[in-house]
Amino acid sequence: IARVFGILFLLTWVTAIGGRVLFEPVYSNPRYALGVGADTDTGVYLGAVFEFLLIVTQIGTAIVLYPLAKRQTEIAAVGYVSARIMESAFALVGVLSLLAVVTMRQDLAGAAGADAASLVAVGTSLTATYDWAFQFGPGLVAGVGNGLILGYVMYRSGLVPRRLAMLGLVGGSLH
Image (cartoon, rainbow, N blue to C red; front, side, top):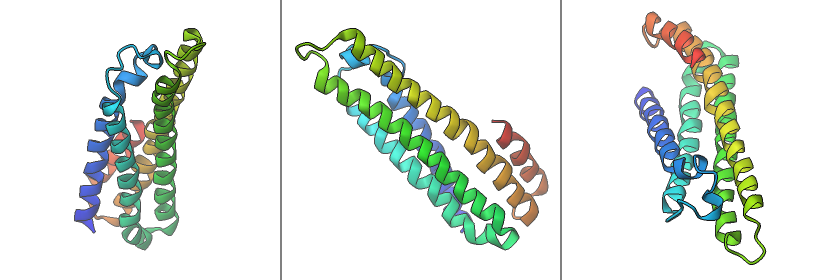
C-alpha cells in the first residue's frame, strides 16, 4: 500500500506540472481565442490528458490510503478522500474551461461575423475560470487535504517519523 501510494503521490506532481506547462499557451495568451500563438492545439490536448491523469492519481492516492487511515480515524480517512475528490472536481472545471477556449477558437475564430473583441472577452473569462479553479483546487483544498488531514493521519498513525508528519501538517497547509 505504501509503495502504491508513494507512486501515485509522485505521479500527482508529475501530471500536475506537465498539465500546467502544456496549458501555458492558452491561459497566458488572451488572444489565443483568435488563433494568435495557437500554431497547434496538440499541446493543449496533451495537457488535458495530463490533467485527467492527475485526477485519477489524486483520487487513487485517497482510495489506496483509505484502509490504513481508517484504522487511525475514520473521520479523517473520509475527509482525505473527500478533499481529494473536491480537488479533482476543481481540476476538471479548469480543464474544461481551457478546452472550451480551444473549441471556441477552432469553431469561431475567422468565421464570418465573429467579433474579435467578444472572442477575447469570452476566452479571458474562461481562462479566469481556470485560474480560480486552480486557486481553489491545488491552492486551497490541497492544503486542507494533503496538509492538515493527511499530516494529521500520518502524525497519529506513526507511519512516518513524527517530525516529518509535523512538517506535512505545517508546510502542507501553508502551501
